[in-house]
Image (tube, rainbow, N blue to C red):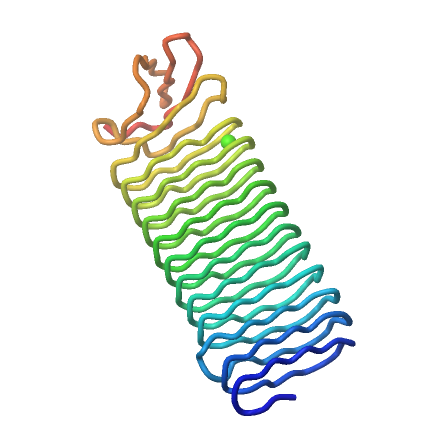
Length: 266
Ligand SMILES: [Ca+2]
């Protein structure tokens, strides 16, 4: 299926392979599943919608592509270079590969794998245990629920991992890392980072750079490795410190333990 020029193609029934044009394609493939869609010729930006059937494979190649997946699980999406916009609605367990470019990717459910490539990307996941690999670039990553693993890559990233036991590798760059309810593990990496780990038994490993913490009472004590005295700072006022072996306990004025610093570097 497909012609030179711009195509508008709708298909259903399943097990369809579609090779559209070198132009700007507008493809809608619903029902059946197991479709393979090549919209990757030309770089004008394609619009592909897939749904109501699982196990589809979508290639859109270079260009600013818009891909929407609806009620469809276990799809493979290769979006190539360009500023792509990919939305997974009511769709579980997908794998998304995008090339360089400023991409916007959102998922709602399931355990998805997202390879976002280089560029200033904007990623949002709602439920599920997602694995997110970012390339270089100033990325914004928000996960709302689930036990997510985030590799934020180089760049000044804004990471907001809300409920769940999340693992965050922030990479080099000046990152802002916020986690919420759950036992989170944070590797802040090189750079001047801001960290707020929220409620739970959280553990943070710091790299070089000036790291800044916000500690809140009633959220549990965060365990911090690699704290450099005279360089890393707490935003809180009125803190007191007690050294116990290789640990330094950080107390609020109320007596609440806010943090345990392991092997403070003087
Ligand atoms: Ca937490």
